[in-house]
Every structure is written in C-alpha cells, then in structure tokens.
Image (cartoon, rainbow, N blue to C red; front, side, top):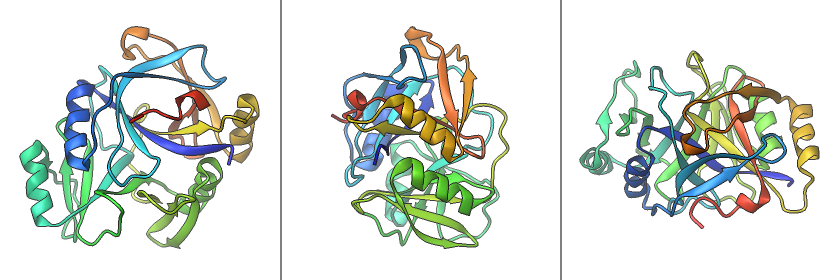
Length: 256
C-alpha cells in the first residue's frame, strides 16, 4: 500500500508531560524528541514533538506536538482504552479525570487526560494492548470508512448503524472506528491522523491519489508550532478533518 496509517498527532501545551502520561497509560515509553516533515505538501519541517510507541499497538504511534491553542470543544478524534474498574482507578491515579459529555448510562467510562482530551475505557474491548480503538467522528460513516480504507491501507471489517470499523492489514494493534455523533468544528482538530508514504512511492502521486479519493488541500498558518514556526499545509478528509502525509524517512517515528 502506498500510504499507511502510522501516527496519531496530538497537540499539547506540555508535550513531554502529556507523552509521559500516555506512556504510563498505554505501557509505552517516550522517545527522544523527533521532527516530522510532510511529503511534497510542505516546504520543510512541521514541528518538533515527543513520540511514544504503545505496547501492543502494532505499527501505530502517538506524537505529541507543542501548541498554544486552548482546548475549547470536544475533540473529533479520541482514543479508547481496554480495561475494567481497576484500570479506571489506575488511570485516575496517573492524572486522568472523570468526564461527563452527556454520555448518559453507558457500559464504558469517559475520562480526560491531563490536558482535557476525552478518552473512553471499554470493559469488554478485544485488543492486543491497552489501546483498543482510535475513533473519529463521522456524519457519513460508510463514505468515511471507504476513504480511510483507501488512504490508510486498513480494511473495513464491521459496519452498522453505529458506524464502521477498520483494522490494519496485519490485524494487530487498535482498530479505527468512524461514527456519530459529530462534534462541531470551530478550527483545526487538536488530534489528527497521519499517514506515512512507502519508500518506493512518488510523493506527488500519493497526494494526487488521496485527492482523487476525496481529500482536499488546505493551507493553515499556525503560530503555535514550536521553534520552527513553519507553515503547515495539510490535507483534509471528505468531512473536513485534517490529516498529515509523512515522508518514508519518518516511518520509524515515533518510538524508533
């Protein structure tokens, strides 16, 4: 597959502190600071950040990047962890907090990390590690599922009124879930999915392939991208969610 899903990028006011929380939460270890760069859709480095490779997450990593933008609304992308009441207590002891987003009486617990990012703890999740799912809001899950299957190289394995579920080609790590409800979008998503291009792919061709599949180009000037202060040019999926295309030289980050 020319591109594959490799990273969840998370904005943070204190990237190292948040990476340490998630490293403990997901049984991963923070790595040295890394720098990521887009392929053909940016002129240079995007931003420095701290990455972790969660245990049991397959090829997927998390990358925490500095931001001065305050969190003002529910994220469109969130993580789901596997665990029971003991796991919830462990996460609260690490610095998570209980959160009420109007979920009502559900079988899972809704928590927030130290910077307010929502995540769920699923009591009966079938996962290879603590990270069970990556969830992205979708008004049209079927259409979004088809786009992300094409973009990520993952396959749709389940679909219903609740949404669609995708899994990686090798079947390990978390699943990718698309479904309602959809949070209002007031600005760029604070959590974004990132793809990595294969070493033998043509970057320009990959951008065009993603555009043909339903993505759109977007220019966003960000003043909170750390010391590089570089201009980020992103793509957005059919429902307006920003995502990154990383070069093959970045395939080892985060967690290399």
